[in-house]
Image 1 (cartoon, rainbow, N blue to C red):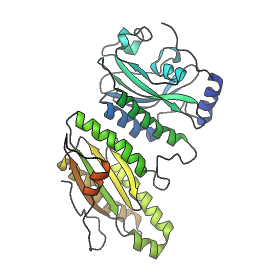
Image 2 (image 1 turned 180 degrees about the horizontal axis):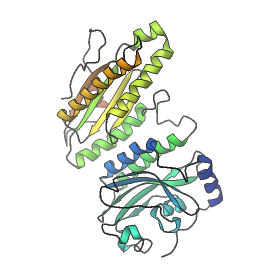
Image 3 (image 1 turned 30 degrees about the vertical axis):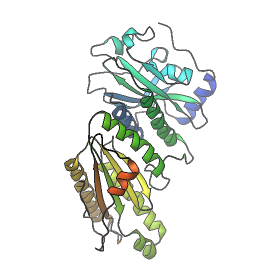
Image 4 (image 1 turned 60 degrees about the horizontal axis):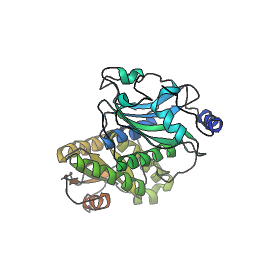
Length: 330
């Protein structure tokens, strides 16, 4: 086998890797949601985010490998898939690694079960240097479509936003949730995925109750902290492969892929319970409460993120803010 070539500006690339302090460090949970989304979006059993240095490939997040019996280990740079992505700066698609002279003899491929398919896209440092790859892998040969590769590229931008010290245009600066534009773009791709796989999806709306009164009474700093707490609460309540975005001043959208109305009701109940627990712990005069609504998207039905958010809008309520849902998904 021939070793993967080095990038054109390998010295500058390695300096960027060093400055980010991502090598010789453990895997990081902040990347897990994107990696799980990538695997779910393509329908692959394994997803990973890698950083490639001069000699080794470091896995910063891995999803699904242990479940299917794959040990990715600590690959040597010269003969690993992601090294080719870094070297060329372009996506790499391998339909069957056992038929590819670059990879057919590496141990994760020759093992049983072994890696057979790979699709990876570049991850860039804030200065533009390619430092690693977001990739999905499988234990059966398979092709990956251009639209799936494009979707992986969209998700790689989310990782780049996480690495950037400056606002990157994909996440909301206050809450850390996806901003409305990114939520819509990634969400529409996920809906396409669910349609292809004949799976239902559910859009939830979680509108934080009483923010106007809180801002007037306690000030905007208190209101902003409550919004940040709300986003954190929602994020830990849903699955890693679900999508969470801030879609308005005090409004959040949650896209549940592969979920039906009953599964969405469970999520609603969890959010309500988490809000109750938060209020008991905080001891604050400001109560965190949500108005909740939902809309089901069935496979093949017309619809996009914007339309589902309108349908999922909670009904108007004159009741005082509480942690009870205004509407269940359905």
